[in-house]
Image 1 (cartoon, rainbow, N blue to C red):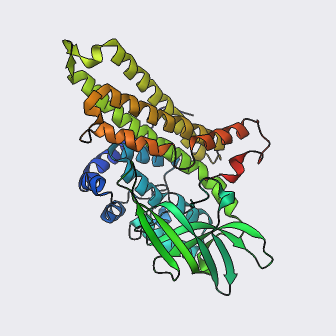
Image 2 (cartoon, one colour; image 1 turned 180 degrees about the vertical axis):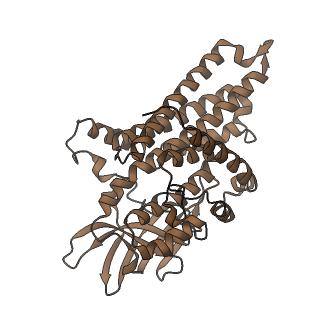
Length: 392
């Protein structure tokens, strides 16, 4: 593994930085203040062909690997985490599952419009009583003729307020009462499918989350992803990518906060010299720089392994655990370095602090990553820990 980025990867990073600064500026800070995601941004990025860069070229993507996806996630998060998260669900889990396991008809109907930014999507898994415990999921699907009849609910769903279609998980229950995990696609306007309230958040405010409800919802048989039994396999192979992308966003938020702190420490004069010349502050910032670099190495090692076709369950869990805890820790420290100004709403470091807390919760909390790592290093038999119940 080469620890240096290639010239092409460095050029891609620079392009993504400029794209984020230019395109996001059209909608910020209004999106943060109103807690709304601008649908037009998806259309804008789709036209520029900057959505779903990892998708095959035949479906409108660039055929790039996980390293490029992580670079994009990191650079977008440096400018605005909420936008990076929303764009990530548009280009990530749901479309990835359709691309890997869906039919050609599904790819033409759902995947290509998502890549082009013509339709908005996401992925609905979390439930009010389930959280990361997939075994507690209550949403069910039963076959009735040419349809699956779905009942249940989802919550905290990114893009749930504005989606045109949404892949989601449910227990498929056969005629004998046996249940298996399965994935389906629900389209806007489907009878029995309704959106609940928009959920307001502490941070990551420019992405929207909502509740979703299924009440005798009729999902066409053609809208099942894969088959009625392979949900666990789909989750298993998709989870590491979602985790490492979240870790990349954590690195992006931490870097943005760190860069703001260094600039402030160079300009703020206290006791006759710049703040950064005081040993207490310089040591803090040196330690923060080291933690960010360590997290970045974990992220891009994991991305490299995934790009080589490795499952990388352990590495992805480690990257997410370390990077997200790091981001929460250093953004808190950086607010402290800024003093009273850092606690004011007008300060971006205050936003970074709020946003970073989101990252250690989404895609499975830190404790869940620790359980996965414990299993992977041999402390449990495979499937003997909670990790097998909490894959995504």
